[in-house]
Image 1 (cartoon, rainbow, N blue to C red):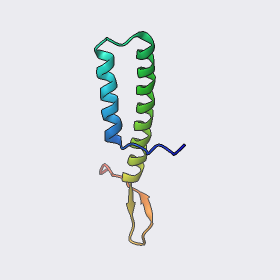
Image 2: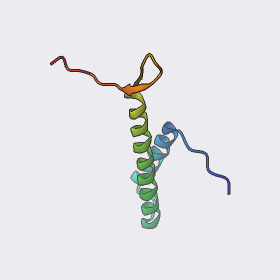
Image 3: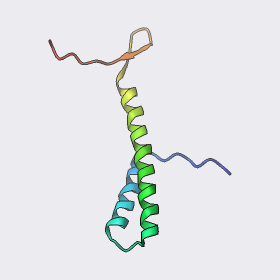
Image 4: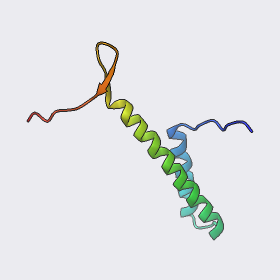
Length: 77
């Protein structure tokens, strides 16, 4: 079986939005609702991981010698 291509953050958010709409309409039976809820929680987990990874990348700056260092904002104290 081929590995499923990883979805972009925006695609995952759209999937999550669709699931929420399906659950809000109240037409799904209990088993289907539980499946959708579980799928939504998995999407949220993946999105959180993507956001954490992006935050780590953004918080690093490239030094003149080409190495990365943490980006810290001083509050002037």
